[in-house]
Image (tube, rainbow, N blue to C red; front, side, top):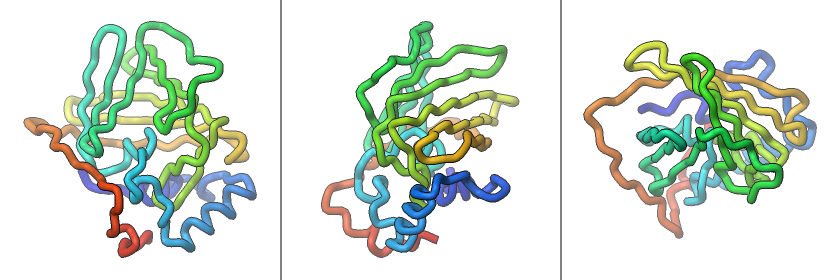
Length: 195
């Protein structure tokens, strides 16, 4: 999988870009000026579900009747999506991946998520996500080798209105997940260029 433009700037395809609240726009500029040095992924911390979708690491989806697991090569991260009909919790314990439940609408799996840690980064530019966020993903396979993921972010603390992007991904058959571990005391991120 190659890194797409969404990894660098999740809102690159939106006319006018992401609808930042003023404080969020200032924060993104500051993060860019620092060459994204605080990016959680570059500092061996969990990246959250949006960056999980846009990073170049392979993922595997495991489906059971009540649970969907998304496994990724990076730090052996995983995501749990409950498909047993439970509602989202009112006050979940905040985590980078939040808490997710899903249901089928025809051939589309609709995933609702909340309970995110405050201060998450959605992309390398540093677009923020706050604990007030709710994310809706719409997974659909229009053909055997193609996965479409529509992502809507509602985060009134960071954005003036909800926004939606669409990712298109391709299947890699006959592959295994290989462990990749980002190690503490990582020193390469200072040499990476953010743009």
